[in-house]
Image 1 (cartoon, one colour):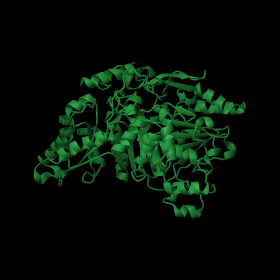
Image 2 (cartoon, one colour; image 1 turned 30 degrees about the horizontal axis):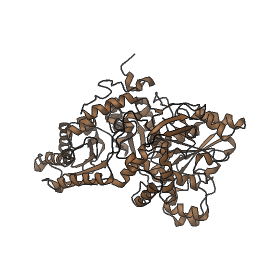
Image 3 (spheres, rainbow, N blue to C red; image 1 turned 90 degrees about the horizontal axis):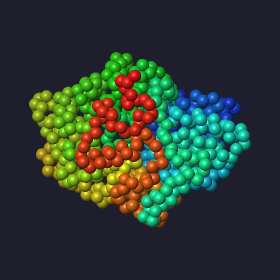
Image 4 (cartoon, rainbow, N blue to C red; image 1 turned 120 degrees about the vertical axis):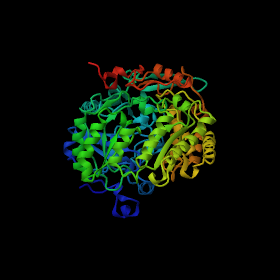
Length: 621
């Protein structure tokens, strides 16, 4: 067992010391004499969040199956340990060996959400790695970033050596081999980065120059190194049942956010919601084989001791073998004390029947995501849900015994009117009314409806990437419209309404849509003390506003301005497969309130067919 990097005295003085000691069930141990490449895999948030992330589990398993490669883990230290490490000059360390991160060959950071950006700098800083990539020496690890936020890497471009576009199971072997070859030949850090730039899907930001117009828009984005490609194409796994998957997932010592076995049933989504980045960048839909999933379910439950299994997908109802998989899980595991979790289901008769078999109806709530309060606005966003379907689904649920419903909406969507906002209250009321249509002696107590609004953020690679975004003051005024309307409802005592933090949403918009100039703002915010910005108790909007002012960033330029469709966007050099022409068509369809059918009903020519598989080729020889 490795000697702990923290003394007993320190461990006893901090909250949840088990976050930092490693040695969990299924942790991988390797003899360092047999290792020539060390990879530190980082989730830049607290341990409980990071341990719940399936992508880290998959990559941890994949790297540790490679000969000569040892993948270890590191998470952001919570604020109590952060302060001690700075005071005592303790370098950030990996959980497996407790060795300093600075001693590793690679530091891989998953970038899952915008509000973790200052935590990325925290990890680098505590690791004693220079924050700016071009200032790193030959002895510093190669810092590589991936995940959904890497699809606009520019607000982090100064801090990473490499960005990985796409799914991690694809070209990491090529990168590791390039590293070994460069090391064997005595090559420099820069020579390795040039080799990396030649590998499909890898973006080395320092090999590109950005030139701006007088109005602040991008004039040109060009490679400054002959090895750098003009376009970076995302990398995908096309055969989802012939790839690595963790048979022995890590089991945390303390309760994680999602303390269960996660069975990923497919990637991608057929629905085409115009606000949804994941639904666009993860195309095409690729399903895992039913027998593969059955085998994995057995092995993962056996090897972890978990008492819950969850199906992971953007839209589980669209998995073609869902009925067979669910019936198998119920037959095999329900009687053995294993709970089955089925998120991302569309509420229909089959889904309700399944959920009634696997859940305690009297204790559980159902989730609907209408996203918009009116049918007009649901057509604008291409949600594909009618009010009739929503009310009927709620009615079936109520008649089956449910009396708790969660409703998710967005405020600030393109073309939104006051009537659309008030529609959130009206739809919530109609759902409550549907409950009270059930005879009193057949009801399960009082109905409880919780309606929640997040604030719309136009994300890269969606049809709404050109849309304007509201300021926090506008967001709050919209929430007030909904809240005031809620107070007029007859069933207002049965309905609770809440909304997301508007100042956080505004910052998410800046970081999601920003260009390379925003790097200096992220750095200044960190210097002012910003970390754990996604946590309410640690988020400090005043410090962010100060950083924005001191670095000369015009929030209106990044947030409220509607982009021209001919403008060069900061992420235009990335090819996700979904063409800009398709996104422009969908942007026009949104403003004309035209619906685009889902991928199984009709191909809309989005461009991802070029990958040669998935739902695009279903039923074809």
